[in-house]
Image (cartoon, rainbow, N blue to C red; front, side, top):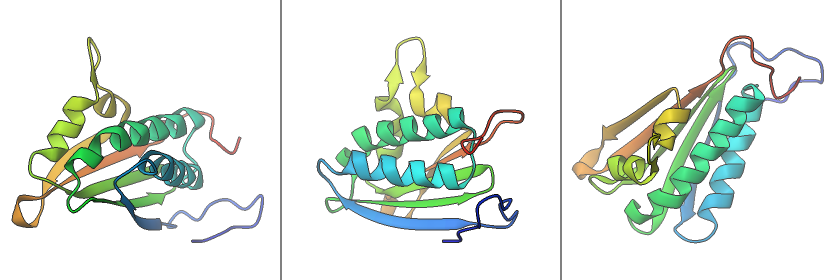
Length: 146
């Protein structure tokens, strides 16, 4: 991880990456929310988008463990200035879509899809799936550091 001196503008090409595998259980939510929140802050996302990222992490953590392969939930997070990408999986076949459906509210739809800028379910080896979620800053919004 790159740490800049206070007051130094973030490097335009800086990319932070973290991969964490959490055993299915009560720590999935707290771990995922904190790691996503840290990356959203490091990406200098506006405070509303940082909150969206943490809400998405909470929604994923509440549903994805049911579709984890081998009792473990691997998550890869990549962030850079103004952007955050979270990749969850491998999930069992059909798990990616079922996570999205499980996060649906009446008259709103999938909370994950409403809050994220991009949501994709990608196939993997042996029929496994990956849920890939991207959240970006929006122009003219106050940043977390402001």
